[in-house]
Image (tube, rainbow, N blue to C red):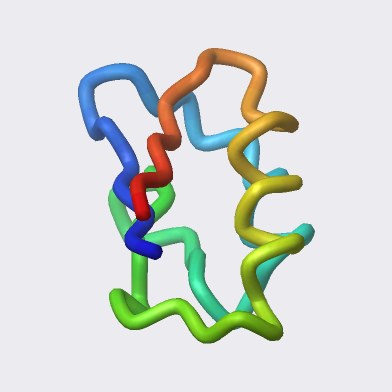
Length: 63
């Protein structure tokens, strides 16, 4: 599983980083970034929660 943040769509609300801090951080430009590209099975639920919680659908997750 891999996560991606579409930078053009991200509004920097920080919800993804609070839901799944092992994968997402807020960068100095105020946008979310993926810090862990190899998502373990133990983090999958949190990553999917972050994706569904994003208010602007800026997160994509693929297997």
